[in-house]
Image (cartoon, rainbow, N blue to C red; front, side):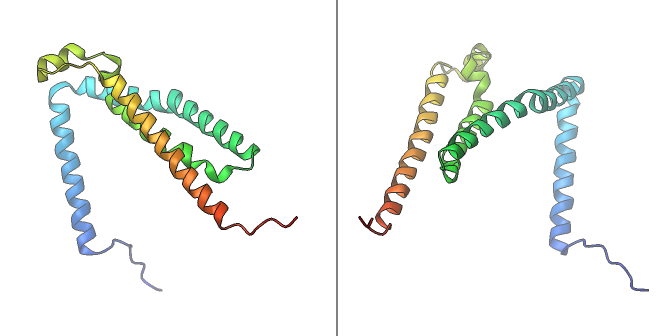
Length: 153
């Protein structure tokens, strides 16, 4: 009977995996040392907010974009909407407390800087992302049109 060998990987992979577990354990101990109940509530709340609210919202938005582009025969152009939308959404997620003004005083106290302008900057970055994506799409469409054979009349 042949002996089964577990696919554990190379010694370097095992060492990196052990280091990542040690780092995660250290972060968990440090994180839970202060307010474990608040951290647990935040993690559960974030999971529920994502799974029950955000996931259906951005899935519906993606399907609407895909169907809209598919109806016009432009399904290959979907990434030109998805990529800037995802990047803009990630920036909004990271900077939401400052964009919304929820932590303005705490930010001012901790840094001595004004929290004004985060919304305007996020909107400018979002416009630049979508503008850059539109420019890239226009360049690719133009290049593809140059390579088309001439129409016969």
